[in-house]
View 1: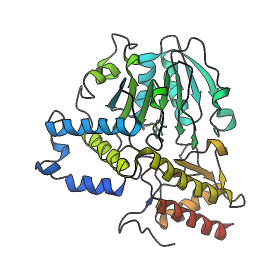
View 2: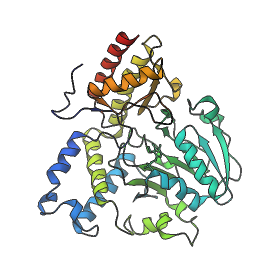
View 3: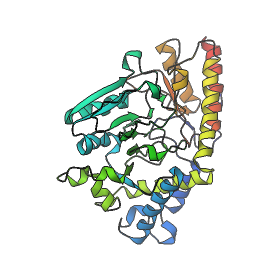
View 4: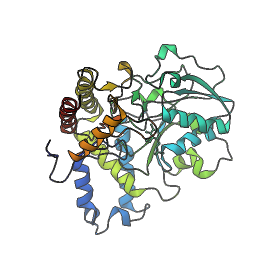
Length: 366
Ligand code: PMP
């Protein structure tokens, strides 16, 4: 197979995160790197209190609000510490008597582990015994009567398991880790109390965590909370209580503008579903050579996970794929197999090249 034709030096990138960014965004950032908007300085070199950066962060917030139709009674915040810090910040701020946790994969496991350090946790659903292949049906979930919130991970990046609905917990605050499927499709933000997402997949680069939090949640935060662990502190200071990741926030703005130019989240959803559809079809039509991990109705549109007949073949697959210009296909080290991460910025050509490679590989190694 020939190497990439995406641009002269770029290859087909299936990395799970940090992951491919839109070429247009990279080119724009490159163009502006030495002199942002003609000011003679880079965004990396100006104060986070400067008028130029103020307009960047305001634009990033405005664009996130527009794309996700964020209602007025929600704050859009840019934090640091990754989604992993949110595993701790959520219980630190909101776990008082107990919290419900739904576990559909490795990130949900990490979240519940952190919550347990803080207080009582009710593991109301776990798909661990079944090997993390599915998301629960909404009607099958039973919430605890005294729970402070319910937490779930809308897309498990490692196992490739995705919820196909915005969880409705009948008035219980819903907290969602949407790190790996945010901005991939429209969601109903009004159903959530708090959504968080590391930016390094669909929103921009690592080092920024997007938090969307409903105003009433801010009132529940203990008065003596440490400032840098307090959502209120970030809300009151418009995400600038200290020096933020200015470069990362600049990229969020560029990525959001790119998504808008592409037709917003409805167009993104259609584009992503088409890519996932042809890739899963290639798995399903391989006479069992490739075996998808997740159950069909829980299959992730973002992270397509599958197995080959042996680990030996999986290693060979990754090595030969890399030689053919297809990178980042090795499954997570704790889980194995193959994982193709096909986020917003992954072009259809990448998926088509992968399908082509898979067909040839199965023919040669069947
Ligand atoms: N949640 C999910 C769903 C993730 O995919 C990841 C990272 N891949 C994390 C949490 C942890 O994110 P971070 O590395 O930004 O802390």
